[in-house]
Length: 161
Image (cartoon, rainbow, N blue to C red; front, side):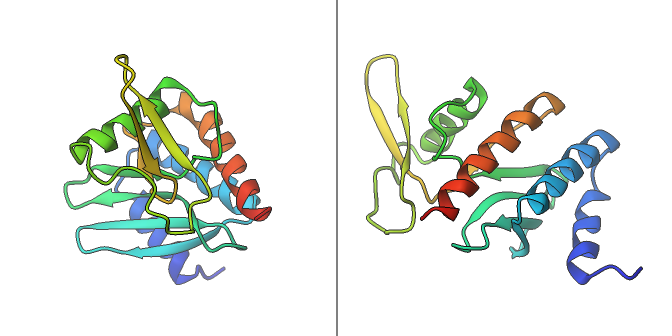
């Protein structure tokens, strides 16, 4: 059976990963396609990546790939979920801090339909636009069930808009 160009591109990304990483991302790929998310090649200069988009809204929910230094890129849109583990909560903090607290709040883009919130122990709260994909570092096998749940909830929200 001949593979599509997109399947070959996905294989090219996966071949740069170790077996554990390949298995994890293959499981996520299979899950995304099982709930009718559409894969789409990401055109970026410094890395190879694939987005998985909701077919109704054409919004990306998950992105994974590998950069020029062979580091894995994993980004997720999950604002529709109100409960998630500390790892995903801290990913929101990290992206806010990576921009030194800039690029926060609602931009009134009309695309997000929600947002992320991070509150520091002193009560300071930041809001990040829900249309942003959130980079999540060091994904492990233990994270896969939660990632699937977050993807599914986000997809259902988009299907009902």
